[in-house]
Amino acid sequence: MSDETPSTPVSDATTTSISRKWLVKMVIFMVALAGLGAWGAADAWIVYPARGEKHAKFMLRDYLGAMRDAGRLSAASVPDPATELARLRTDGTSTDAEAARLGWLTSLSRIHNLTQEEQAMASVGPGEDALTVFANPRQRLSDLETELGTQNVPSALSAYDIPFQYLLVLLGFGGSLAMVVFLIRVAARKFSWDPGEHRLTLPDGRSFTPEQITKVDKRDWHKYFIHLTVEGEGFDKEVRLDLLRFVPLEQWVLEMETLHPNYEPPEADAPEAAPAEADAGTPEPEQS
Image: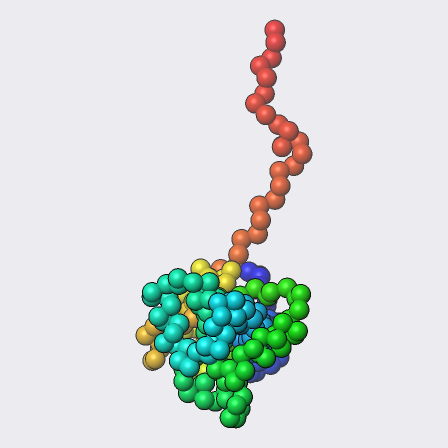
């Protein structure tokens, strides 16, 4: 945006439209927010749960192995995992088997709520494994050892990994939706111009001509805003116009400024001094 004031409007439009340059920037920002939301959704519902499930398998293998070594493999099932996890966290562990059980239940808690209701949902049928209840713990241990083999243990999920992804989903999709609503509201605002009267009509229906302008304040000109003090009914407050979003609003406002009775054109830059004048200094005294 320039401080120069054209003598005639550049556009012959009589109604504003959204600036294409500004709209492109907003759409890019909106797409970026949607992408952030999609990224968070993929991590929250696919990537992190899959990693958590695999980590829990390794922890279960270690737990069943510890129970086998302790000669208690038949008692490996945990019917109430939520209560047991709370007990282990409070009381601590005294055996390798309890330490392994704590690690396994902690890993499960990152992706499951460990309630008895979820246990019931995870149970496929009589004699089959539920989430933490095993019909044949020895066979389950053998299956896990065969499946996992020498694979590397994936990194464990923290308690904040999946909730943080939900936050990204909220910020991304919520921000993108807010941008859509914002763009719709901006598109609904229209300024109109009467070239005969040089009258500008605001979106709320108020209108004014150059003669009604008492002050033009360009303190926010670098931010593409201009403040006008206008005389007339309904103009008890300063009018702030956004020259970036709406085109050709800037040309109309600049033309109104030039048509104001007290308009003073900007002063031209002072001419540079002639080379002889520029080189001239204090004359040296004559020598006798």
